[in-house]
Image (cartoon, rainbow, N blue to C red; front, side, top):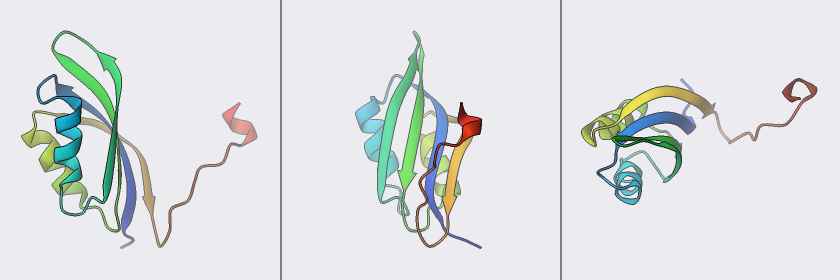
Length: 96
């Protein structure tokens, strides 16, 4: 099975922990080499965030467990990159 090198997820998280603390904790998951979290939407009780992770062989289950331990819920997996190297999306005519 090919190694997961990049994972992009839509996550709903509580305000606490802060975005900084949340990202630090997710990045400390053993198989994660780096993490970026972007705030998409803010409401009175929760934050909708985009979580982008990279690593040599990301353990998706371990990442989901970490997010859940922080009070978050994975809404969707929006992008996955697998294989020996990362491939960057290229715009096509279908993208508009």
